Length: 107
Length: 120
Image (cartoon, rainbow over all chains, first blue to last red):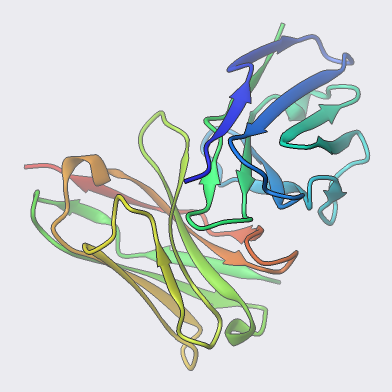
């Protein structure tokens, strides 16, 4: 099973600042990685797939990048609606696996 | 509009069974895999199972293999999750998700979830 390790567990950021979230895969997953956002009481929604492609309707302030088994989600200028929990997920191998999540909270 | 609507959750005793359903609309159901993902209270997301669109392939997390069975009825645009021998650790919100709209394995549409509580 591929283990996805996200860091940090919690990120405290002020509105308007940049947030950088990391996700490391325990083995190569090519670029088969997605990022999801989940707000309290809501289902997750996909933000990024293929490591760097934005899903339909996702603002340009969200971007994804990859280097080997290290993946990054960057939110360039945090808006109030971006405070949430973010999960990475690999879909290169079975079983599909998620990271444990990064909570982005207001500083 | 693409929609997924789960049902069938509830309270069940340990060792009991439950069948979840997820009714889909707004897309060609048989063309896409469908997945179940769960979230225990206060915890992260855990992939549970996936059924391919039409070739009959199914996949399971080790934690549910042998106890859960995913199936689908493409004529009814519905995917099911039969859960047997339930344990306390199966308590979670269960989400169904459309799989593959942005590439196989990407969960691009999610339902609102149905809650399963396993307790005596």
